[in-house]
Amino acid sequence: MLETFRALAEPSRFHIFELLAEKPLPVGDVSERLGIRQPQASKHLRALSHAGLVEVRPDAQRRIYALRTEPLRELDVWLERYRCMWEEQFERLDGVLRELQAAPKKPIPRKKRTKR
Amino acid sequence: MLETFRALAEPSRFHIFELLAEKPLPVGDVSERLGIRQPQASKHLRALSHAGLVEVRPDAQRRIYALRTEPLRELDVWLERYRCMWEEQFERLDGVLRELQAAPKKPIPRKKRTKR
DNA sequence: TATGAATATTCCTTGACGGGAATATTCGTG
DNA sequence: CACGAATATTCCCGTCAAGGAATATTCATA
Image (tube, rainbow over the protein chains, first blue to last red):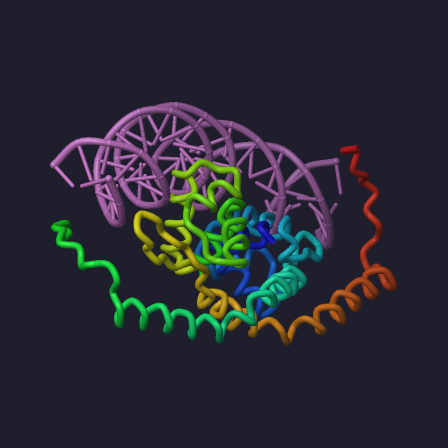
C-alpha cells in the first residue's frame, strides 16, 4: 500500500504506469515516448516492478514491461472503507459551514493579517 | 492525484489519515496516539491539508483536524479506468505463463546465476 | 494585559532520491 | 567467439523532505 503510493507519487513513474496501461512496451519505447533517457526509464521501471506494479517478460535482449493491476485492487479494497463516508462528507462539510456562518459564537478577531 | 499519492506515501501521514478516519482529532491527540512529537504532527497535518486530505476546524486554541474524502473520490475515479483490467489480468498472466512453459522457443540459457 | 495551553513555524542536519554520464551485462547473430 | 543492440547498474552530484530542538503565534482567561 505504502509502496504503491510511493511508486506512483513520482511523476515519471505515474506517467510510465499510465503509458503501460495502453499496452506493454519495451524499455526503449518507454524512454522514447516519455522523453527520458534509457537509464532513468530502467530505474523507474525497476521501482515500479519492486512495487509490484509492473511485470517483465524477456524477449531476446528486450524486456517487455506490462502492467500488474493487483496493487490497484488492494488500493480499491482500502478505498472501500472510505466509500461510505463520501455522501456523509458533504453533509458534514455543509453542516459545519452552516453552523460557522449562522452562529459565530466567538467574536470576530480584530487582528488582521497584513501579510499581503 | 500525484499530491494525494505523495501525501499518503509517508508512513506517519498514512497513519494519521487512518487515525482521523475514526473521528476528527486535535493536534495533541494525533501526536500522542501516533507517538510522534507535536511539531511533526503539525507538519504532517499541514502536508495532508495542502493535499486536501484533511480540513481544519478551529476550536479555541485547538485545531480539530478531520478527514476530507474528496481526493479519495478522485482516486476512485482514476481507478475506474483500471477496473476492467482486473479479470483480464489473470487471464493474460496465466496465458503468458502457459505459453512460456509449454513452448520455450529459445534454448535454455546455460549461464547460471551464481549470486547465491 | 500578562499568562498558560495548544499549535505553528523556523533553523539545522542528515538521509533518501532523481537525473546525468559512463560502464557493465545480456542476448542473438554472423 | 567477437560484435552490436537492448537494457541494467554504478558513481556522482544536487535537491528535497523528515526529524529534532527551539521559538513564535494564537487564544481564552483571570
